[in-house]
Length: 305
Image (cartoon, rainbow, N blue to C red):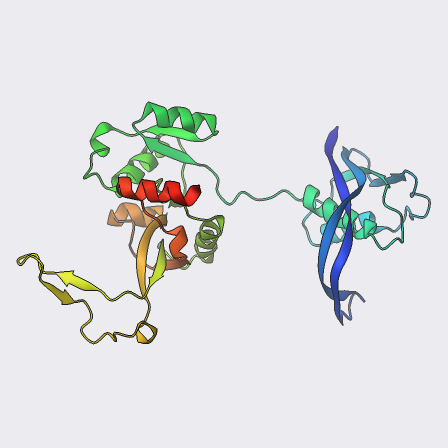
């Protein structure tokens, strides 16, 4: 049964720095910048019922490749020693060599790199994605994109309804379906400019196990005034001793509504998305747009033109 079929591209080194030699392996630490070119070996991987791996090389440039020791066999051996690939799983690997051997085009190292990339199963960082809404239009969009839709009760869709109430309803619904999670990451649709890096930074903090809730913030060096509610047009300084010179003022960090992450048991106990040990992820102001009115929508349209 065919497991994988992929191309292993040749590469040209644009930069190469050979570092210190490792005493145990005899290998060197290297830094390099490479460019892939449209020349490639073809590799097919089959799961085998045999007790040994079978590695075969074919093609115009296969004659000078050793069957006993090559980058494919070395890579498989290393992956097994590190416990990354199951010791009992054996493979039949066919390599059609189109990249000339010893040509400086990195055919052997490319074979090893693409083998690792295609053999190792990536762990999902996010297990499930759910969309909570009372809208049938949103339901259709959710289905088209392969996500899970949960209908939110009308009473939780009012202008004064809290985000926490929608999240707790979703988690309660999933519990009844025997779907239990430790963390929930909330991505409000009103902050569409968040980046993938923002999300990855949140996940990194979750994995440290140091926090109960995580929020995104962005820098602000503004000079702030507070309006007196009792007297129209009357204001006072938020920080009376703040310097007028922007360069001399400390950064303030403004909470954005870009991403929230919560340990679910703490969220239930506190009823608040911001509780316990709080972690902060810094974002750029350009990633922190929060849409509240039509002006924000028009601004977003101009940005995306």
